[in-house]
Each structure stands twice: as structure tokens, then as C-alpha cells.
Image 1: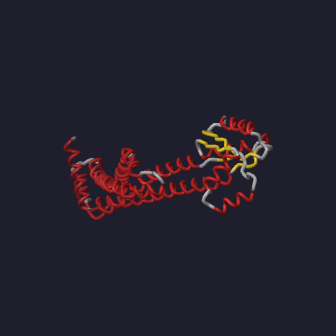
Image 2 (image 1 turned 45 degrees about the vertical axis):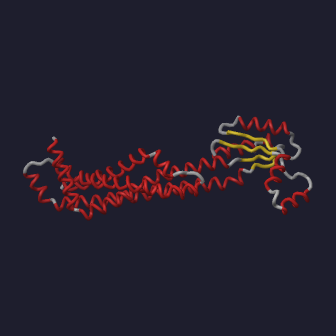
Image 3 (image 1 turned 45 degrees about the horizontal axis):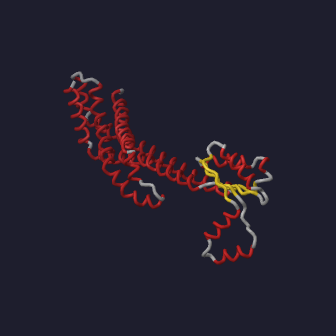
Length: 302
């Protein structure tokens, strides 16, 4: 059994060396495929981080009509806290709202003068609502638009924030779909090149294969050496990715840290190393094995 395996391994390596030029191209395309598929996983992490950051920053405010008592507002607050997904509801009186506004724009003379000309307090009392998921805000808004709140609620600012939320989800979805399509195209290219490489190796060794068949070599022995060739191509692509991919992640990490406001790409890569490595091995070895099997099967079925 060991002699059988050694012969298959040796033959596979010789086949790889024989078609060196095509083998290098195959390894390179496989490396690009592995890198693209791994990048989809990493940038999903970026998207999730940005989504969490967005959820922390976005809240919805409900403004109450003038004359609505503080007790009525607090009763509404209690009702909101009963809705699944509502994390926090903060009451902001009209006095607090104008005090915060004045503090924020104390150095802006134009705004200060404009506010002084208005005379009375133009701010309405409000409730600032924070949900566990940005998708919950639409349910909260629908709840506040029920007829029982008609005499209390002046407006809910969800619809001013909704385009920002929808745009983010649209960009995130487009990026993930684009990455997946690019990964599939590269996988198809890698499969095709590996297939051609193995087919050429089979044709160049056709005389040897004929002799093997004459002396009673099994189809699995013939098949095995070319599968090994495909596995070598995939394995080398994985090894190259193992060296280059972390370096690229490290180089991009500081730029992405500033761009996203806190996402450390390299730390995320290290914490998910075994998952990413598993994806790379499955992609590289899987592509090499499957394309080799298909190529050899077509030849042996003749």
C-alpha cells in the first residue's frame, strides 16, 4: 500500500514538473481565487462592524405636540419599552433640548441671534428611542402612528433617517454579491485552467498510460497521479496565500482602521485565522481535486 502511494505521489510530482509553465499559471489563478473568496469573508466582517456602529449611532426621536403633559410622554415611554427590540428610551424636555442646542452652537453668533429673535422656546419635548436592530425602527414608527397617539405625537424623524439606513444595506448587499460573483468567476477560470493543465499532462503521458494499462495498472493508479498533480497546484496556491494574504491584511489594516473608525482588519484576520485557513484549503485542494477528477474521467471513459 505504501509503495502504491509513493508511486502515485512521485508520478504526480513528475507530471507537475513536466507541465511547469501551465502549472505556475494554474497556481497563480488558484491563489487569486482563494484570496477573493477569503476577502469576501473578511469584508463581511467589515460590513458587520459598520452595521453595529450604525446601530449605535442611529436612534429615532418622536416629538410631542405643544401642551402634551410630561406624564403623557412618560406613559408613552413605558409603552415603547414594552416593544420587542427597544433597548432604551430617553425623555428630553423642551428646556433640555434648547439648553443642549445653545451649548452646541454657543460660538455661532448667527444662530444665537436667530434664536434670540424667535423669543420663545421653539423646541418640542421628545423621546429618543434606541433599538437593538436598525430594522426595528420601522415597527416602532408604525406603532407611534396608531390612532391613539394622534393627539400626542407631532412627528417621528424615522423617515428622515430611513434613506441612510437603506443606502447602507444596499451598498453592503451589492458588495457581498459582487465579491461572490468575482469569486465564482475566478473559481471557474481556475477550474478550467487546472482541467487544461491535467489534460495536457495526460496527453503528454499517453504512451506511459498505455503501457500501464498493458501491464495491468488499475484506473485508480492512473487517476491518482493526476489528482495528486491537481492537489499540488491547489496546495501551493494555499501556501502562497498563507504567506501573502496576512501581509496584505496587515498593510491594509491601518488605512481601514481610519476609514471605518475602529475596525482592525489584521486583528479580525488573526481571530478568524482557522476559519479563513479552512476556506482556503477547501477552495484550493477542492478545485485541484475536482478539476483533475473530471479531466481524468473524460480520458479514461474513452
